[in-house]
Structure formats: C-alpha cells, structure tokens
Length: 230
Image: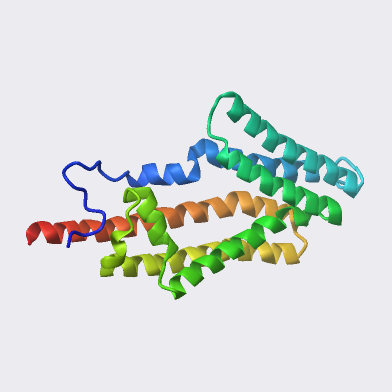
C-alpha cells in the first residue's frame, strides 16, 4: 500500500507549508482586510464616545457600525471592481452586518462580537464530534487541499491517528480563542474584545495551522522514506 500523499510519477508536488498557510489565511492582504472593519468599529466607538469626543453612547455606536459596515462594503467593492475573488469579503460582510444589527438592537457595543464568538465555539464542537465518530475533519481538509481531493488516508493508520489528534488540537485552539473573547464579553469589555480579536485570534490561528502542516509533513515524509528503504 502506498502511503497517502505520496506523489506518483505524473503528479505535481504538494504545496509548500507557506503556500498552504497563505492560501488559507488569504495572504497578508486577507489578514488586513478581515481586520479593517473590526478596527474601524473599535476606533470609532472609542474616539467618538463620551470619554473622548463626548458623543452619546448610542450615537457613537451608530457611527462605529457605519464605519465597520462601510469599510467591509468598500473592501468587497474594490475586489469586485478588480475582478478578484470576493468569497472572503462576502463572508466577512455577513458576519459584520449580523454583529452590527445585534449591537444596534441592544445598544451595547459588545454584541458586535457575539456572532463570531458563537460561530467559533460551534466550529470547535463540530470538530470534536467528527473525532468522536472517527471522521476527523482535518483529514478531509488535507485531502482536499493537499491530496488532490483523495481521501485515502483512512487506510493509513498512522496518518489517521495524526488527523484525529490534530482535529482535537484545532478544537482546543478555537475554544481558546472564543473562550478569551467570551470572558471579555461577560465582563462588558467591548473595546478589549476588538483588540483581542485582531491581535490574538489570528496569531493563534496561524500558529495552529503551521503546526498542523508540519505534523502532517513529518508523518508523510517518514512514510515515504520507509517505503524507499523497503
């Protein structure tokens, strides 16, 4: 049996670790674009609030929402005008719009971040369920991203076990990100929530993704060496 992920004579080599990370994160530009609406919300809510510009709380919140949604729309419009992929922009706009609606309805800036917190906890739960039913989602993701759509890793015991514990790792990573934000949400620290989402969440995501690619590469490389020796 040939180890999963071993390229044949007519197959292209797997993407490098950096290429896969860049693709999933949308590159540096993708990171910036996803952070701009949140940054706009935080800055406008603080600078226009009672402690700085002196605007009434709900007025400052309104301008923060306008700035956040407006920046998300502008990013999507620029991408569309340049005929660039808009999938990430549309997904981001939906989350921003939902958070903005919740914040306006409640009058509390912290609710802007609630959809993202709940979605992240939901993703962690789905990952754990996939491990429990022995269908680790990280394995499926690897098959699509780096194994030309083939899901033959089920027959590779070592790779299957690797995907199991890596899926648990991702669940822990997501829960950590969401958990920190949930604590701040409970403490009514709306501005701190935005800062954490920008400065903490993405580094945790990038580190988890990099470690995942390294762990998979370590297993597949060792199996290729064992096959070559045999």
